[in-house]
Image (tube, rainbow, N blue to C red; front, side, top):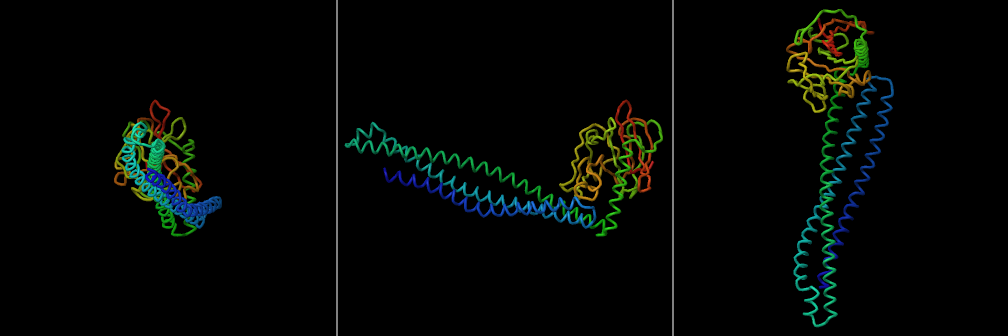
Length: 386
């Protein structure tokens, strides 16, 4: 029986030591890589913050993109290294789990057989020497204790395997998001160079136009536009049309739609119902990095379906990835268009006003406003023809 106990105890010890040693050796190299990546990420992040604090120039904006892209690439490498490290640990745990399971199954069968013939009463009766009988009984107890330890280790290995598999799945999701961010950042840089033709003068023109448009819209929201009352309109009545092409401080045709309640801008999606649409608010139409399109209200839309959605409400992709982020950090409405039907309709009945505002750029930004009946809500429709 001594010969049987010794291999069991040695096996448990060797499995534990080999698992710990292999994890420690693998972790040392991976930990060094992760530390190095962490230091590089910190360095590039600090440089990015320095660039963001400087004057806005095309060269500076491109440098920001380059640094942001490098930070994201390093984060991807960091996540991939974590996945590799964790995958190695999972493989080791899996091997140990299989070995422990096999050992426990074998030991359980042998211990059961021994227990049937090794119980104290039977041993004492069947063994001529009382000393040998007691020795046999004590060895049996030690083997049973080793079996219990083996079972505990088996349960711990199974728990560790499950937990680390979950961590691996979480890391793989993070990696997917990081790769999408990298694609978006590269697309944003390419778009910047495309529209500016890598020309500092053109970049400044875009900045000035964005600033003038923002100032005009803020003034209109504050009630500083020149308005005239047109009369009452019903829901669905035609009230204007989208300008087809560039207009005052806008480089392309779209409707800038604003909802204002108690003189505060609100998220239009809280009022509008669902509609057939194409999300073009990210790095490209249909890309996964676009702004959320989440209507949850009951209003009809001011334009016909299908709606082409080019910028959302709040902190948008454009704010994070284009020059407009140098001008404003919060988009106060949504930008939409139906290129096949430029007609704009009232979303609710109310009093229609036609207005305009002349900003610092000299052009007049035209808009219409509907003061909704029996309500403290009004809606604004910008970049339009009456």
